Amino acid sequence: MKDMGADAIRTSHNMPSTMQMEVCDSMGMMVMAESFDGWKDPKVRNGYGKLWDEWWQKDITNLILNHRNHPSIIMWSVGNEIPEQWKPEGVERYKHLTALCHRLDPSRQVTCGMDQPDGTMWAGFAQVADVPGYNYRVHKYEEMMKRLPQGFLLGSETASTVSSRGEYFFPDTVAPNKEHPNGQCSGYDVEHCWWSNLPDDDWKMQDDYNWVTGEFVWTG
Image (tube, rainbow, N blue to C red):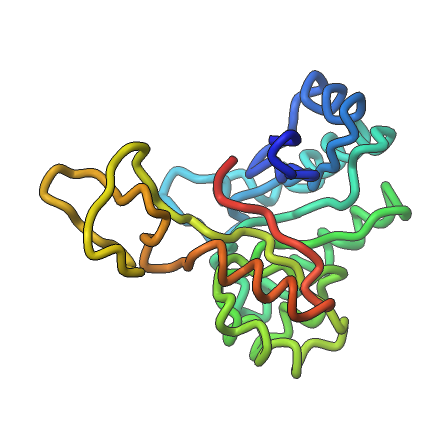
């Protein structure tokens, strides 16, 4: 990954191992260490929401106390596509998580991967973030920037481009959710999932606007 130009890793969606952190330290690979894929509102019936009240503070504390002395850590992520990101209670949980992170490590900022830009702006969720992180929705970046008080944003999850090595189909047109008879994807890198976009779209935003601070591509 580093040889191809990547300089940072996002550890979705759980605490990274000590070995991974030591390797990143030694190679100069920056890390956004992530904690949760869900908070109290469940994504699935038997998910972390059942444990939230008892364990969220313990798990954040464990993450930060274990890894805050690793120089490769550049920020903490406290969630990914959280169901309550457009609710008032989600805003309060985000504030509590951020405050705990700051108390345990005042030197680093906190983010959360948001995938509902309109809802998070309406609820005030995006506005309380140290680093507003957006998953996909690159077509919304300029609109969000007009409303974000932070003055910048991060592509906390991007791309989801699909490709099969050695498989080429014509015409080579850009298409979401394209299906081919043999079950493969085009190797021309012109196909992507319905919720995402081509890498070129993200790179263009980063080239054109200095308020896009970078991206984490799904997946390495």
